[in-house]
Image 1 (tube, rainbow, N blue to C red):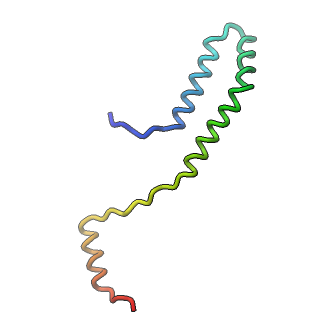
Image 2 (image 1 turned 45 degrees about the vertical axis):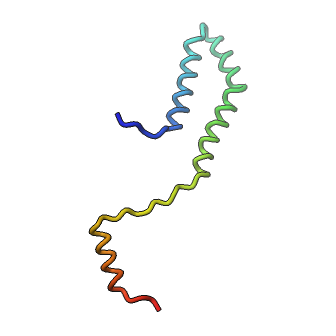
Image 3 (image 1 turned 90 degrees about the vertical axis):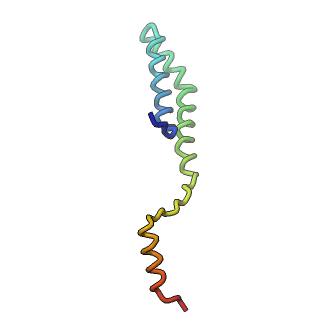
Length: 90
C-alpha cells in the first residue's frame, strides 16, 4: 500500500470519536454520563475549539510553493520555434 500525506482533519475527528466512545463505555448510569459531560464542557470544549481554530489558521498562513510547468519535449521544441519566429522587442 502506498503511503500518503498526514490528514490532520481525520486525525482530529478520529480523536473526538474515541473520546466520545470512551465516555459512553465508562459511564454506569445516565446521571454519571451527564456529570461527565458537564465536566467535559468546562475544559474540553474550549480546548477543542482552540485546536480546531489552530488547525484552520495554520494552513491558511502557509503560502503554497510555486510550481514550475513541466513541458514535454514536443512542447519545448514548439516553444523554441515560436521564440525564433518572433522579432525581438525594441
